[in-house]
Image (cartoon, rainbow, N blue to C red; front, side, top):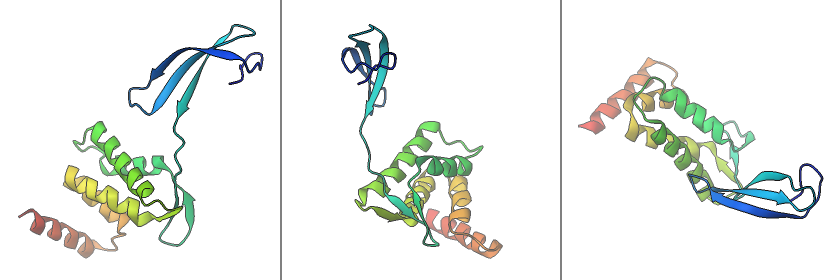
Length: 152
């Protein structure tokens, strides 16, 4: 690791700590030349797939887009932040578990919808109305009716 002050490549690790989530290691290092201390972070490099949208276009996988969709659906709903974060992680894992270089956006969308269905009915309907592109009130009512029927 190159020292940010003097560009020397020789340094020693003084301290290593695992992050709270367990997905990253924080290392304190000291340069052998100038004695400056600096911090580095080490994490697993994940190979995320390209997402194939409904129109056939391709985009890089973006965890933040999933998070934004979940946050919008759960806006002013009693869904704890931990559960929203877990849902984003589940959707990410569903895309990665396919093991393909390209994954249809439906894989991610369906994972989010299934998770929201378990967490909060209103958040689920909000997300479904955008994801399934409801064109009119009858499609919206049809989805609500199927939810009510399945609850009984």
